[in-house]
Image (tube, rainbow, N blue to C red):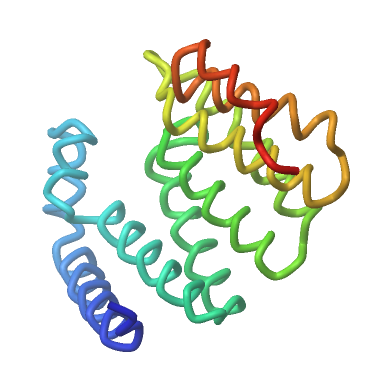
Amino acid sequence: MGRFPDAETSYRASLAIRETIAKRDQLRLAAALNNLATSQVESEGIGPIGVARALSNIGEVQRAQSRYTEADASFQRALRIKREILGPNHPDIATSLNNLAALRQDFGDLEGAEKLYLDAVPIREKQSPVDRPALASLYNNIGTLHRKTGRLQTAEGHIKKAVNFGRSPSALDILPSLPD
């Protein structure tokens, strides 16, 4: 709806509540994390992962408004929390790396964007089973970045991988008709 200030206000309120709960109930939260599977904690939206997800949402709103410095800080903080809680190879890490890469691409740091995209690839590839749509999206992002920087052969290779992971192999037949 384009009401970015309202969305950001709501996300910030959610973040403040989640941080307050996490601080106030650290012992209880630690016991819950010790006794529950991470997926249960995530689905309830409590604790550090809930904070990280709220930060990512804030970052997306800031990115949509071209507030790149603020969005970068939100995405970086979310990534730090996720790495600390989930470890380096969790799918949420790949998502955060992809979000941060897209932001870097937006403000012209193409080398930084490429590094972040490429850091996310092995995380996605190690998923069992592989999250095909997420991997396809990542390869498409790398291919688009390479196309923008004139590396057309590598762009084509990544886009073909994206099509292969995103759809049936017969979808490769559409590539010759795609515009440059």
